[in-house]
Length: 402
Image 1 (cartoon, one colour):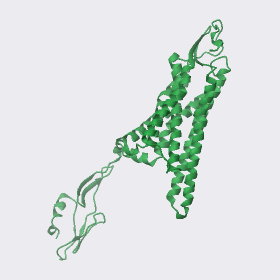
Image 2 (cartoon, one colour):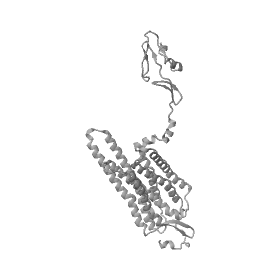
Image 3 (cartoon, helix red, strand yellow):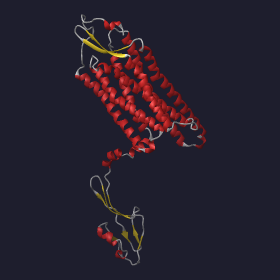
Image 4 (spheres, one colour):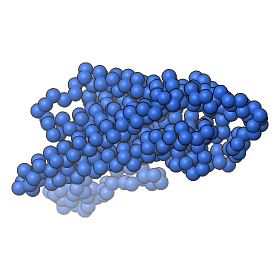
């Protein structure tokens, strides 16, 4: 550790402003900014997990990877916003030695797991579209890769648990507590982490989706003479999906990883273990974007996928939500003849138009789709029959209508 922390500061006043805790107004503002993103992401990821788990047709290797990413994003939204707000609310670090070692490791491990899963999904889509004759991920390989993604996340984030420690400094008017890092090991680690979290996955995404788009473009040109609009629609949908995946990764993850590196350099060159000024605003925004990225997983991989939408409509949860919308009540149906009434939302009864008996035919509306031939050819006046119970009984005997 740096000898600076072994100096006796008890005879000096704390050189920065002492605020201990944010005002309730600021706490509520920061909480309500993150709350909608957290609730939306938690509900969305839970629904995505529910659809995949409850539908056997969706239990494919690709969807297993999406299932794994939804779990990691769900854990991010359950754990990280609360810890982040806890750090923002208090001036001192309140979680102690265990929290100091666990908090950074949890967040980084979940981010690494999610990034590895995104790369695996990109590779699987590349092999499915661009190289369909080559071997794709099967169930066994997918389970192994999922296990590797979690192990890799724990291994790559373990230096944050090993080389971080909880420190206290006793000033004349204040007791400062914070997390400090080993300045000999972690500088190299942050460079490796930025490469693992940003540059490698970005290169994989750009390569895979560029190959997919190139393959689809060639395939469309080869079938252009057939004027098949389906291929154009599929290409357009695929292009939109690829654009959203790559753009969300760059815009939502890159600021956080860049600011992690910048923050480390600022703390390393500062005698105080605090970052002052406008950097707090940027730090808060970068975390907001990370949580937003985790909450967008159900939209990118669920709502934009027709198979997931169709499977969700078949779930009991969807039927429960939509049961209140069904208000039609058909009373009696006998063969092809439908009697009774239809109740509307205002409880009005709609009676079907009555059939008219002529000398030769029973003229009916188109919805009944039948002809009635009378057995006698006598000239009688027209009779109108209502759809009550007596007419239903008369309808059974042809002679009763003559």
